[in-house]
Length: 427
Image 1 (cartoon, rainbow, N blue to C red):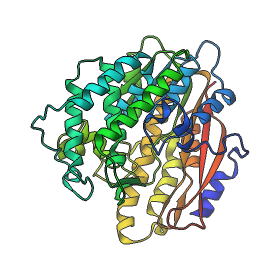
Image 2 (image 1 turned 180 degrees about the vertical axis):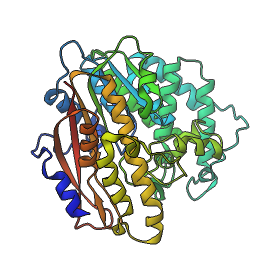
Image 3 (image 1 turned 30 degrees about the vertical axis):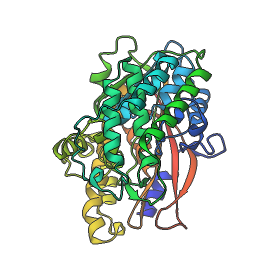
């Protein structure tokens, strides 16, 4: 397969320099107002967005920016800072909430927020609240000192507090940001891991988080901003959602990072946040959310589709994906059982998302897809190159594949996987 992949990549416009060096992780954002309100480890730097704005400017008459996988809202916040209209879509209810709270920062009065925080901290009205059904909250090893119950009490105190919706939502976001402060859980790759450590009380953690928010808001109170729209929905079917946005018909820039084909299920990674805020209340709801996600993981039995196979213009890509899915290099029995369906489903979903984006891209505008290659068994899959080929096959013009980073393979430190910006335009 590596020879086949080498042939695939031979005529593609790869380029490398330092323009995006150090920008494909969230670390920078932890020093930036608003961005640092919640650590979203899968996100990219705010500096990447600013650099994209410079390198791939929106065409005259089409200033709108669209992020169909808006996650933590980094693209939207930077667009807002540049006074550009922006729209984001997100399927994960918690990530959608996160983006919405952060982009509504200008609607929060800091004095009223400080007052609301004090009332929440001092609220001793103990209500009869049961823990979420998620078993993680019931494990004293994960949440020592009765912290799980205290989190629920704080959530209810916030909901009872008489203040604005924007302040309540900011306080709830701060509460979710305390989860790693008050528990022995740590986000590590595709799962939460038990990580014994000293923890602080939920009230102390909430106070610290909200004071950071207030500090940020006071430091940028005169910053210009544009209204941002955040929609809950599916990037594979974005046209219907966007048709309701009367102010923006086509976008000059579509910038995003889809899930990588690396078996990560983000409804698992962010399950505590989803259940704490009652965005999920049952395992059946969790299953239904998983079924609506991008097919980048094997956490559920997704419907089987044949989009690449059924499109005559994509037959060559289909054959390549099929060869990849059948490759013996995928490895052991467990991996070999789950990887083929992930590979087939993932690239079918890539086709759907790019087709939707092409419909909403303005003439001379840019699509910038930030994506990483993946490994299944000993098979390294050039996701960036395959995405480039799918885009070309549906009529997009490939500008370049900008290799921004090489990351070490999690299991084989001597092997490195590319992370790239795949850039398209439309004449």
